[in-house]
Image 1 (cartoon, rainbow, N blue to C red):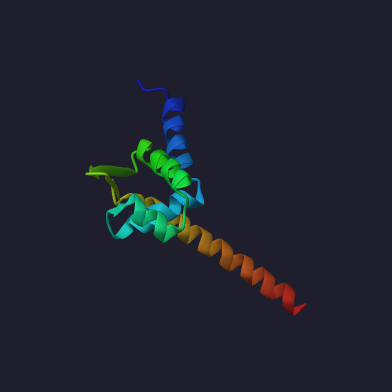
Image 2 (cartoon, rainbow, N blue to C red):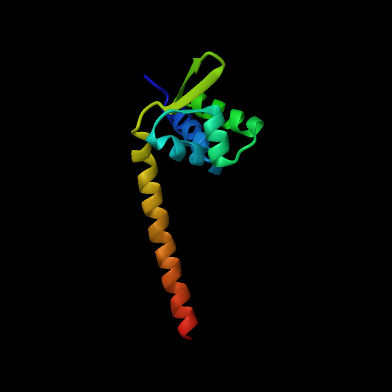
Length: 110
């Protein structure tokens, strides 16, 4: 039988891989398909060293695939289901921000 704490550790490690704005930007950038490291870096204006670290974390977490063609490395999202994970987070935050805006609007009327 699998220890439940092991399952929680796996989940936490997966969520840690997503818990950085740079990594979320990479995932969103790859939504439309495979890109080279150079393309990703230019589009997101990330330094090579930082980008490489983020790509390694996402690959190790099983979120990204990579392939090499000659000297160029390309990355893609391994499973588009990751967007099904991220969508509820966006909806939750949108709702939370709307509620905050409603409070601010109410305070502004006082």
